[in-house]
Amino acid sequence: MKIPTILVPHESVFIDEERYYVARSGANMPATDHVLAWGQMQRRIFLERGYRPDRLLVTGSPKFDIFHRYQPTLDRDAYASIFALDPSLPIVLFAGQPLDSQVDSQDYALDRQSQAIEDLLDVARELGVQVIIRQPPAKRTIIDQKTRLKIETSVDFAIDGPVKFLVSPEEALYHAAAVLSVNSTMLFEAVLMGRPSISMPYFKFEQIWQKLDIARAPDKDTLLRLLAEALAKGKPMVSEQGMGWARRELAAGAFDGAAAARVCAEMTRIAALPRREAMRPGIPEELVEGHTSGAIALLSNDALPARWAAPLRRLFGVKALALPKEMRKAAGADYGMRIDQRFQTVDPYYQSVRRLLGRPELFVDHGFVASGTPKAVASLIYDDRASYYDATRESRLVARLNGEMTLDPAERDRVAALLPRLSVGPAPLRTSARRILVVDQAQNDRAVALGGASVDSFATMLKVALEADPSAEIGVMAPAAIGSLPPAPILTPERIAEIAGARKVTMLAAPERSGLPAGWDVVHVVSADVGLIAALGGAEVVCHGTPFYAGWGFTTDRRAVPFRRRARTAEEVFHVAWIVSSRYFDPRTGEPCALETLLPPAEAGSSAPAAAAARTAVP
Image 1: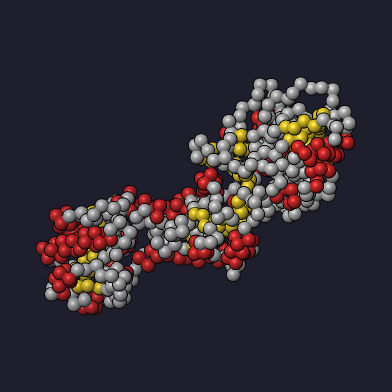
Image 2: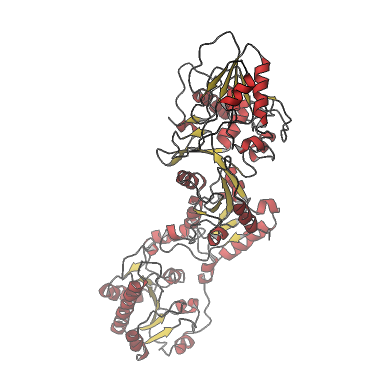
């Protein structure tokens, strides 16, 4: 519908923060454009899960407004008459619960709640008070036959619910001399209405009300003492420290009855915003802006290698991974994630499912730093518009370079400090001849076609290099493996011999992860990534295709380069590609890290890569 969406939570955390607003699919972060949280507890939970702080506001809970200066609809006599009770005697309220989330065994929890009710009825008789058991709004009854018989045969006890209730919960709280429950929210609501409340934790579970210092009666003897005290005091038995916690964690600083007004005011403000400001961008766009998603990703690969799972979860905050063939899970996905498609064909079924669901897409590829083992992924480069090597569209990477970005002094210093650490080794002893390197690529590398070239471009590139300087030393560097894929070269030894004839050509094995040996004066590429670092090292770089670093003014481009609208330095392109558009993962610790963590230290006396590595391995 393309209208702003706002989450106003109905409930807060009353048991376990980890289980709050978590779907079976694994998603645990709101997909809405804005969240109007109760208090700091909800705010903290959603921020820790990756929700954007600029779209999360604490307003308090409208649910609690009614308890501020509540005005009853029934007088004491009318209320008591509904339950056939004596209006002159105290009436205490027990708020029953289904107890389907406190412990693993609901039957066990219900048995313990039944014992709590039995003890309450005995204590009530001893103290001379009446009891209303308010059942939860669920079809399953919480009162066993024995207890029901005791209640129905007594003039001092009554039952309300479970499906149809005789009075509202607010009315029940107002007329109660005390409120008891295992863990119901009504314990806190009674406090807000000025009534004493007592928790009856007859089994062990995590209880939020301990932080509020609500009185706790885990057994019959304690219940007798605390209920007598509550009836004598006639007011909440909580500490000021506990109420301070509640005002901070469950409200906007006070339970003042104005939360709904604040929510309405914020909704009015959001509705008046331009649509671009009112609505969150898609998750892929948020990710490229540096946020984490906390969402479900629809994977393009049915058989995603295990090495990808941890980096995706830790670097992007992915909570669950869905496959296109699992339609029920796929329907819950927030966005598509096209992973590692450079060397394989895009699954058309994935594309059809993603388009059917109308989900945006994130393009994720192996980054510029290798893990040193095919069993791990150390770096990822990602984009919400196109893969970084796709020259047929303007990627986010290219759009940033076309924009107004500049490097501030700290960013320039960081780039300068990184460059010496990219070298793969010392340069060989120089001869008088110029040294020209031709960089091959794998036959199944989609960056060739998406870079505006073809297999024939490699033969042309080698011929140009050979003809450029008859006396030059010529080398051809084989393509490096990416992941566990063995590369099949385009320029095979037979093809090189056919093109070079009697001319000597040195065959070079690729350093780890498409690295580039030092000491070459000219480097010819089609769309291999290594050309950027070669340019940073001072080599002349000749592009026969359209890699992401072509067309900015520091390469010699033998074909027209689309989508480049301004001049950039190699350092600026490096910053955008290696730092802004990439994320890094240390396979040794299993944690996200900075690029610097993965690079070896600079060699003494080095200041820049001498046509060094564009893909370097974790030491």
